[in-house]
Length: 511
Ligand SMILES: Cc1cc2nc3c(=O)[nH]c(=O)nc-3n(C[C@H](O)[C@H](O)[C@H](O)COP(=O)(O)OP(=O)(O)OC[C@H]3O[C@@H](n4cnc5c(N)ncnc54)[C@H](O)[C@@H]3O)c2cc1C
Image (cartoon, rainbow, N blue to C red; front, side):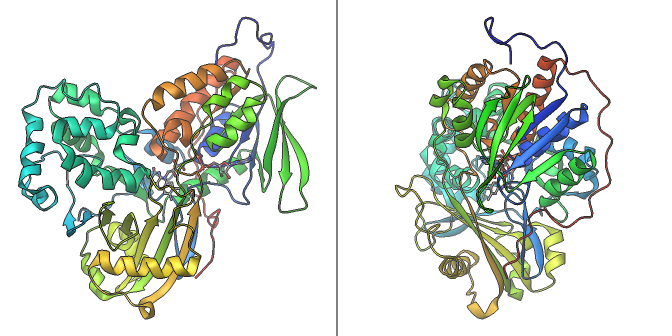
């Protein structure tokens, strides 16, 4: 954020207004923190609803998460925000029944300790089916290798391969990486997707012990937590609070251009309302927070600093979520725990993951009632040559049929169309940006280049890394730095609000 010596003159009075482009969680959190410091804030969002990848849809009468359904508990970033919003009481932990892997030879239990598929104890009998005898022997070497082995590897795959061998990468870690990050472990920066893992390896001497230590550090021994009623309550409550704080929320306007405001210091954006005759409008603010996807942020900012163009991110994979609500009392026993991650080598299944939501979250089970189940399958594998993965390109009705067939195979019991009481397909474009190797350095370079533009920052998953824990922490720290640099005086922290009682911000009906 530091201005260049030949940059614009330092502002004489602290700014009083701010503009946020993008109304996903990063934009909503940025707007909240700016408004809490007394600024007049305008937030512009292209879609008709706010929340971005954290929203709701309705399937068979159940209001469920349409995107993110949990948050990582490795840091206080999300819990602290939830406390501020009065949502702390609604935090819930997933059931401890564990998850499964679907390998070429069928379904096997996944490691129940460690993180991202890296087992805390690679010699645990539970893993024999997945790794085989030779694979377990190789994985066990991790405990005897000196701590420096693998330390210079920057990718998740490289580090795990060096310590525990190829089979742990292929059988345990790749399904997790594909399911959670839509990327192969060799394409993921270990520091971005598993912060603290390499430091823990140095401290504990083995990768298994490091993964176990990170897992134990999480409350309730679970890597993730959720909210009763769904993570969509986070967006809903943020919106409710912004309205109360007087933030101007403009939805349905696509920002198409970004300019310096000729009338005063600051920024202005040109917005277009595509659904209503391409009407245009202008919004202004002295401070600017770009909280869109990376492609849009770079396109808009590069008009002012051409050097930013080289940071245009690779488009992330397109993904589709198929949510099925089925009547099948035999699923009450949760035969695959909270769900399965599917190995790329498995035949006969095209989904990359299945979440048994009514087994994972008590609130979903209670809402659905006995014998009724919510299964959420995700499609869109990385490393496909097609711009749109073939399953994601299927029309909704065909994708629902495929999901029902995949669910039968994965759950190990036939699920017939007559048992389907509701279904919905939600498609996400560029919503899962890839934190490739060298990500942290690229982000630092991008932010150094952006610093030549006065009073502007960029936030969001494409910079912070996928996941609410990363996005919330990074957004808050960027906004703090922006405010400090602009000389905005401190004010008391915002008071915690009542949980919102308004309907979800992005409920889609389609059952
Ligand atoms: C299917 C799915 C499941 C996920 N599950 C989890 C999970 O369980 N746990 C977890 O921690 N994370 C999960 N994530 C990731 C997490 O949801 C994201 O990292 C986070 O929500 C990203 O927030 P964001 O604000 O950076 O981006 P987004 O939510 O993508 O918001 C960006 C916003 O910018 C808007 N925008 C773009 N261009 C313009 C423009 N020109 N003008 C105006 N507005 C514009 C977009 O419409 C969008 O609303 C999941 C993501 C997806 C897609």
